[in-house]
Length: 172
Image 1 (cartoon, rainbow, N blue to C red):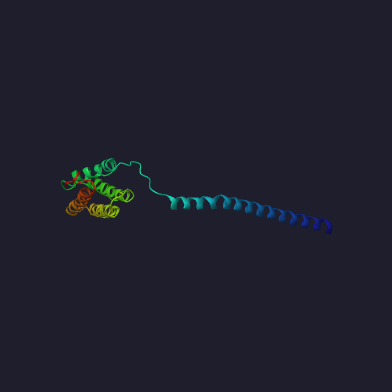
Image 2 (cartoon, rainbow, N blue to C red):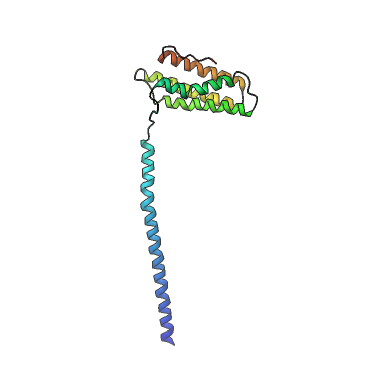
């Protein structure tokens, strides 16, 4: 009986050891596979993010302004002609002011070869004033929104004076 019991115990220990070894090998294989496939992806995504640069879809500045800036400007002009009556009207004003503010970031990558510094200052002012208009609209402050819109347009017109020979003057 001792021999049978010893054989059974030895057999159980051998099977348990083999099972543990098998599980260990499987876990190492899974871990290695995860490491092999995840490390380059993270590194590649990080590299892509640091190397990403804006590329103009439309090179002509007049076309860019006409389709990027003019539609929200016209909607804001109409939307701020009288006090917005409801939440939906304020939502449109917030949207268009945010579009103008964010679109100014695109201007920073499209500066002319002559006087890029002045161009950047105008673009940053449009971004700032568009953001202030957005904040005023979030508060549903009609008078402040009108004032911010007028300030925004004043800067747009100064930029047009400098870079477009005074053409394309905007009115609130």
